[in-house]
Length: 493
Image (tube, rainbow, N blue to C red; front, side, top):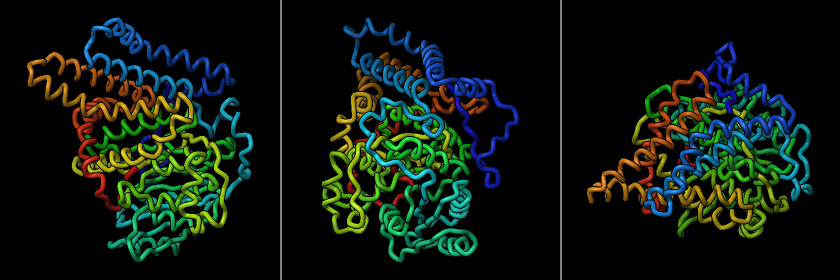
């Protein structure tokens, strides 16, 4: 079940593994990975099913109680079923597309998609605003990529601190293009303006608080070259500042699960719903025509300023059904008019071996603000991607709409079992609910521990589970009520 997961890097040694001895779990995973495809897949399925057996038994024990059970029991069984399904898909069926070719059956309806050159040119872009302390480290890791055919473009979105001075110094020293915008327009407009100056066959984006492993971009490019049906891929993000506070440790474990399990599960159907900002890599012909729509996106009659990675991914996933209309709306924009690319049934994947580290909020108030931004982006994207995801097949639809259901129901369940039940003396329901939260959290914590041998942060995954169910779920109604309020937000997804 486990794969190599490096610890957060230092400035001088990012991407390096400080442990000279390979842990036995990783060595075993590498041994499985070296086997022929049928053997490799069979071994993984058997091992993952064995590891998930306690959860499967728990589900089987609860099933006979469902006809006469409470709403809580039904909800708990759905959550448990979803957790088992995602972990099975993420560990047993997912394969890194930069290492193994995608399964033949996945290519049946995409054989007419043109292949990329063996070594395509890549434009790697980042938008920045007031990031004096971290932007130099970010840019140096971008330039330090081991991919040879690379242009690096940095867009300064009217910073008011010393960021422009740092960028001018870096531009004089390194092979990097810097674009200075005089008026702040937001991250989406900044990146779109950067693409207007980009020439790459592949467009890659990162965030200004991130650092990339030297081979991260190369692995994403390899996945796109080897699998022409992929229009976009996401890298694997972890917390750069994981050891700073209890909160950053908890977020690090959450990031690992969201990528290693959730994105991997979606990738088995070629329908990753969010190619996340820390490392988002697109074929030019899959996304460039839709950047004007992204930059000028509106929602409920107003500009939606958050740079939602979900929405950008949605343009790749749904362009067969939505693309022509979006391009007509911006037909005069050079990004559409210069080359009108054919709408195709692209698949969207995830490259587990492409490591990137992002700075996460170390204090609670910025963390809550980030979560509100993400909830708003989730709501906005639901109205777009939710309108067509059912067309992408039953597996992709089940994962997408199942996630939507749990996010929507979570605040209702929290109110029912943490407020209504105690108020009516039904304390046992509250205890059952809390036990369910801990059970799910322990399953994710064990997943982290097995995937990251020697990393002591696994216990903080329980804290993140508690935060998610007891606090973060309440943010959805607030986010919906304040969704028309927006600001420039580098970390919004």
